[in-house]
Image (cartoon, rainbow, N blue to C red; front, side, top):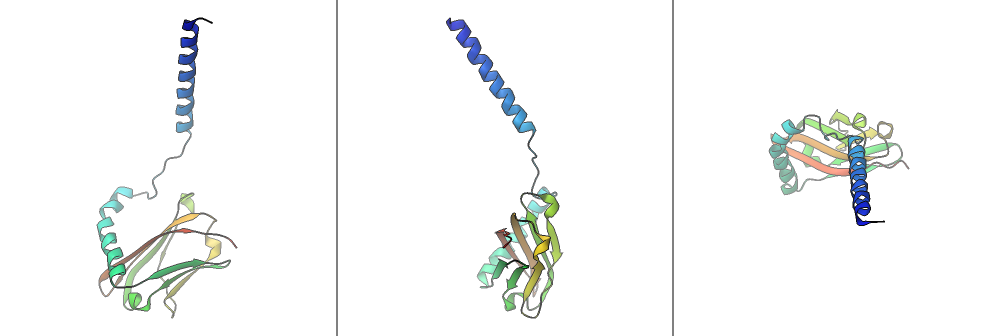
Length: 147
């Protein structure tokens, strides 16, 4: 085989590989995590202040799951005079499985969510609330496992 055929074969192989990569890239679903990502990015400075406040005040939020419930436990002092509290569970693999709810605590400063609202996937947990006009925020990645 002469060198000209080798060059044509290499060029054809390269072009076919490029067309294959273009095809694979066009088949992917590229969505943003949030539908209003850019508007939320502008509000992120307030969220950073809330995260710093949570850390500096020594407050904590713990997240646990078992077969029946997902539990968010707050430090009592962090929710003593709470208002405007929201919880978002953003499913990273399926946007239709996102959960958005108001914080509804029991007497032990715990929020209990039924496990049947979740699929086995990784979630981005976002909690924001006001306590004594002090913004507080909590962020964590959470992998929901069915036991």
